[in-house]
Length: 183
Ligand SMILES: [Zn+2]
Image (cartoon, rainbow, N blue to C red; front, side):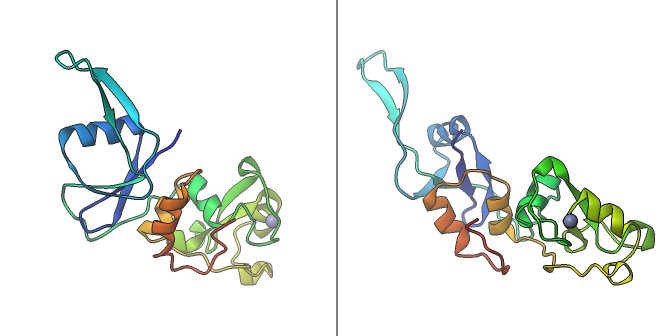
């Protein structure tokens, strides 16, 4: 199902809308502007007086009225975490299916590590077991990449499996982390 990227008035990504949510926003008049090539028109009901079918043309990115938040805290979940790490175990470097990956705490929780983006990586079950409750240095298992906290543009990309070309172009302008984002 195609999703519409929602922006606030300042242009910061603020979530993904379903087509129905986007249509509702248009109907309410809450859309400030749209970006990108128009999607196939969505037809609504037939107007009783004119007999004409209403039609809404959606754009893949829309800015809505509302509050502008200055701080964005990207929610941490395994699905986005594993996408950040390209479904690669950051210890052995192999790629795995989502179900074969685990969330590893670089500094283990038992050693004072926290459950933050900067302290978690995707790890295969074997490497997670081998590392156990050690630091990478103690286990002699150096990380292959530095774990980073995604900014709002990066997080919105990671949160969606399928992103349209216009949406990717918009989000990728603000990608900061060194990662092969196209893969
Ligand atoms: Zn591994």
